[in-house]
Every structure is written in C-alpha cells, then in structure tokens.
Amino acid sequence: MSTEKMVDYWRQSANEAKENAEETYVRNHVDWAFFFWHLAIEKLFKGIIAKNGKIPLPVHDLAKLASIAGITLSAKQRDELDEITTYNIDARYDDYKRNFYKKVTKREYHEKWVKICREVFLWVSAMY
Image (cartoon, rainbow, N blue to C red; front, top):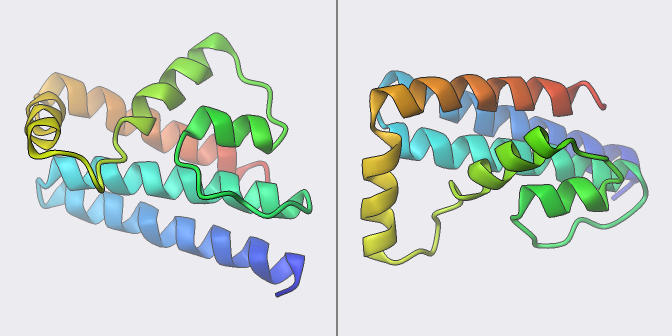
C-alpha cells in the first residue's frame, strides 16, 4: 500500500470512528461514545505517523503516538490525551468497565470531555 493510500485509510477510518462517537453519544451510550472518540483520535495520529513514512505501531497511548508522530505537546494537551487514553476499554476487566461507566455518565464530566474530544480531533485533523 502506498503512503498516500495508508494516510487516506487512517483519516477515513478516523472520520468513521468520530461519526460513531457522535451517534452513540446522541443515543446516550456515553461510555461507547468515549471509546469511539479515543479510537478516532488514535487513528488520526496513526495517519500522521504514516504520512511521516513510518509504520504505525499497535499502541493506544495517545501521548506516545503524538510523540512518535513528532508532535510536541503542551502540558495541557498531554493531560487531555492521557485522560482520553483511559477511554480505550476494549479488553479491560468488568470492574474497570463499571468504574469507567460511572465516571463518564456523569453529566458534568461527559459534557466537558465530549467538547475536549471534538477540539482535539479538529486540532489533529488540521495536521493533515
């Protein structure tokens, strides 16, 4: 696969994950929405890594992916990416999932962090 096709794949896949995040959020499946937000942002970083001529590693830590992509983060950006990384719940234990659900379904939390996820997505998208 050419670099251009790989970058297009990651970007398109990121946009699909973003749409899933928005749709599940509207349906009040907040926990899954945050999982999809993490996935969308992760895929954007992997596209930038591919754009830089590297093969994206199977890493889910967003701050680490930003570093691999050559992006310098402010302390605030690092903190936000660290929080969003906690949304990667795919293979976690049930007690972790339960605690995650309790955290993200609190209105004040999810309203704040959906806004931040949208902003981060736009910020990383602009690097294409």
